[in-house]
Length: 461
View 1 (cartoon, one colour):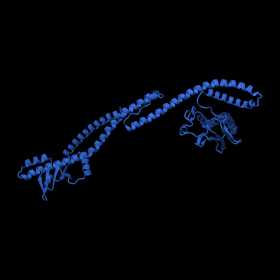
View 2 (spheres, one colour):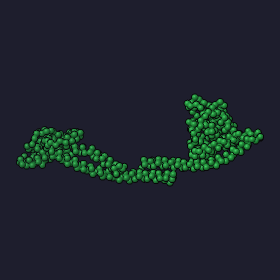
View 3 (cartoon, helix red, strand yellow):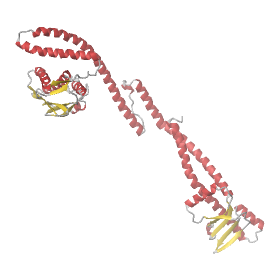
View 4 (cartoon, helix red, strand yellow):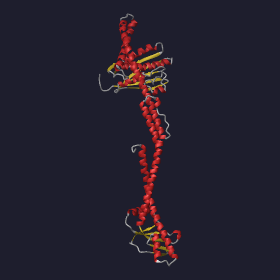
């Protein structure tokens, strides 16, 4: 109970209300003491007026008047004449004087606390103004013990009342918090527990309904988080299913391509010059496809294998990609330019770099041919002491804003109808495996530009 939010709130409310009552208690005690002394002055004034009305009051009646007023003597100043009206023997000398005519609040509070803490019974002189202007001043002498006892009794009653008020206030606040805050919080916790049991079920996503602004904001934030998590889990499940399907397809495709390799051996022996020229490229393409299928089967998961780095001639890889894309372009007026220096060598995995360049060029070609007009794709490369830079420029229609938001995310970055959006995602993963980076530097109606940066590092091949 004490460790719960409502339990701690109950305790804190009680403590704070008691603290507030204590702060009220101090000036209340000072006010009670002042009223107590003013009451004694008023009683003494009434007794003195009775004596002034009849000078023949005997000593016994005078003593009774003083007892009723709870004072030892009364001095009344009227018409600038100070007159001892009533008097009786005092048990001890006067220890101090209190003037109530012009006392500051801080002085009254300080004196009240001192009197409350002082146990000795003193005799004090109290001076005040008579009520209804019945003189210039009135002063009495009185004991402090009865006043202190009355102050203690009053203080205990104040503290008891404060305790009752604080408990009632805390209980009311406790009930209100249980209804308006703790119960909705428990509802959110229950939603989270139900959601955690099956996070892929979109029906379990919380629907914000809290009336408290802060709690409503928390529910909306939780809804956003659950929606993103559910989408990510579904995406992960689809990727897992895709990986399983790719593994199965790769297994059968590898067998088919292996058979195709056997036929290419016979094709290479053809005397037809065109066949003889194209056969090596066919063999290379089939070999690359077989290698890709074997890699997929070997790993059986979405991650790409680590690159086997070696120094390769970038221009040769680019030219091989462009030759393949020229065949795919067919009769389209598409110009493919290899602007890579023939002497430029980079440290990379040749197979993976072929896939990276192929994906970028293929995307650009498909974007240009989709416009049913001519275009140009230029691949340029340069280097500096820290890195190699490969620049891809095309004159295509550019990328729409939606595609730019998820450009390198699988199944989200495609702008072509029927496209999977995997090409750039795969390229980005392969480039990261090389320790490099791929980015879209610009895009628009005049075309797009991608830049791949590959670090040189400290090692040598």
